[in-house]
Image 1 (spheres, rainbow, N blue to C red):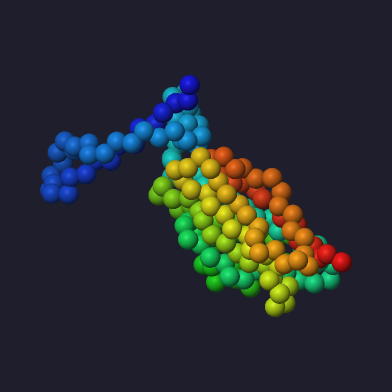
Image 2 (cartoon, rainbow, N blue to C red):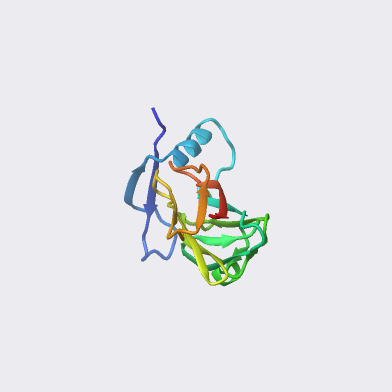
Length: 184
């Protein structure tokens, strides 16, 4: 049987001095990430925060186009944030746009939820060779859901885009290995 974590929200906005708070909302949650944290808590796992970037992904994009570069454009984040190595240092979508993946190189684009909030990550990026859009990568890694999504869409017919394995069920999407090559 999976452990169940009960999240209680206590609100009393008219209070001026500390008093006993009233429980106004209780929701039982069953999610693999929450279940794992609850298990660690019950086994004396020490200091555990539910909010420390549980939802994240690293897109490791490999350029197999031969002698052409790939450029990342149209970076969009609708939930969470982009980051580069340090999840505490956010990147704006405009800082992700313009990233160039040289021939034969691998570039990592990372996104995560927000620390201190029950927020996952959702967004998309497009890959271009010159003015030709190769494809769009989109993801949704919600905090409260046991189902993640990652998609390569709008793939141009002149290219092959390979998406490696990734975690589809709860928690972080994790590392997603992506290869982009031109069809001859």
